[in-house]
Length: 324
Image 1 (cartoon, rainbow, N blue to C red):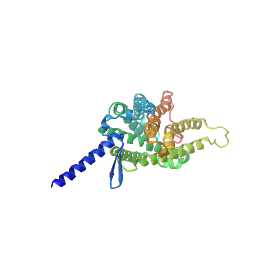
Image 2 (image 1 turned 120 degrees about the horizontal axis):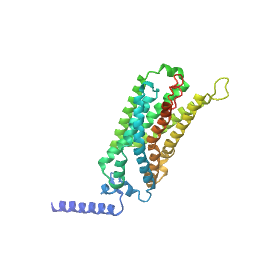
Image 3 (image 1 turned 45 degrees about the vertical axis):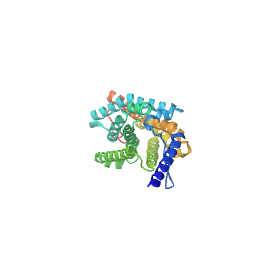
Image 4 (image 1 turned 120 degrees about the vertical axis):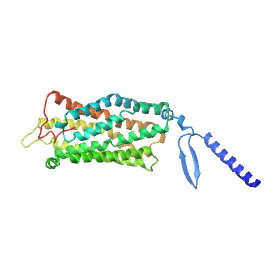
């Protein structure tokens, strides 16, 4: 019996020495279980280490990101609420894409509410329960690309396949499409909120690559179709010219907002973990998230002047060349 107690005490002493040595060698601890390695990247008192402290050697990107998030809050919330009010007020005279703009404005409005929580949890605190809320909102924002893809598809069908578009002009299938997008969005957000799903980040990379390629294809095809002058004409029709300029602006904004993640995220393994986490990550998501303000401002810049001028929508080409 004494020999058994001596054996247990010796093992406890060995474990204490091992864990003590791991604390002395920094914040990353390595435990060996059956030849497998488990990395714990935060120190034992992780609640005291904020994101800002983790990135104290390169804080510029985090400050840049938070500045853009507060721009989203002060500009994006009123802009998206104005879009919602405008769409509700003019629902009897709206384009076929407006249902997707309506849901996108709802999504962006909720996302623009989180900057104070982000500032508190990334700079001053590090509360694990708050991270679940933030990850859920991040997942919702990631999926906004799906609504943008629906808008691009609707424009593409209107311009390049007008006969089919006219046959499918009934909005019931657009409501079904918006509902399906919300289901996918919520499922993705919940999965991101839960975390610890192996290779989950690859789902986001695949989604953004596919959505970016699809939106790029649709808008380039629309520009090509609008660029074609009518028969016997050397110049573009004025209506087509206005639509062409608007689609060109939208394409530039899509590239501005979503090219950085498309260009950098697939090559994450080529960056050091600290550089990717503290620099690349926040710069890329800063460009993505500012779209919550740019998109409603662009929509209002097109709609408000038309209302002030009392210009009714063109029934023949309003749906087919509506750039927003």
